[in-house]
Image (cartoon, rainbow, N blue to C red; front, side, top):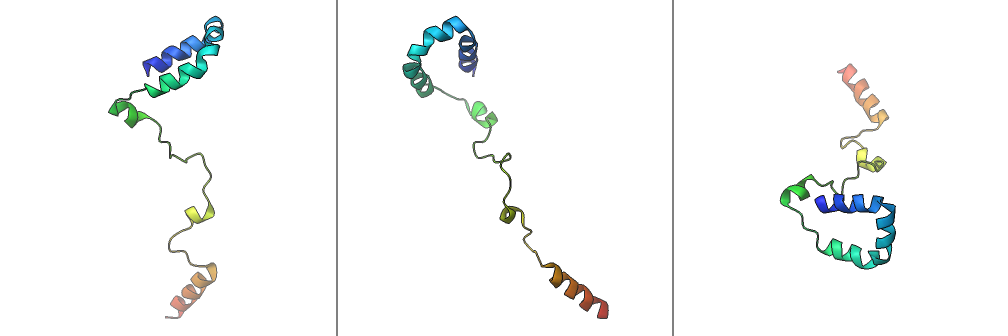
Length: 82
């Protein structure tokens, strides 16, 4: 995490970022291949499967015990007569 912060500061400096630009195709794969995370780092990372920002589909939110409106009306009418 500290290394990421270091590279972020470096990238914000125009002179340094221009000097590093030709080396990025070699530098980025090298940095990515050498990344190491502690179990705590992994536990606090955002979940890649988190879809909170994706709208739900109607079939995802439909009630499990869904009955049509007419079915409820028939049951209510039948209950009143009992």
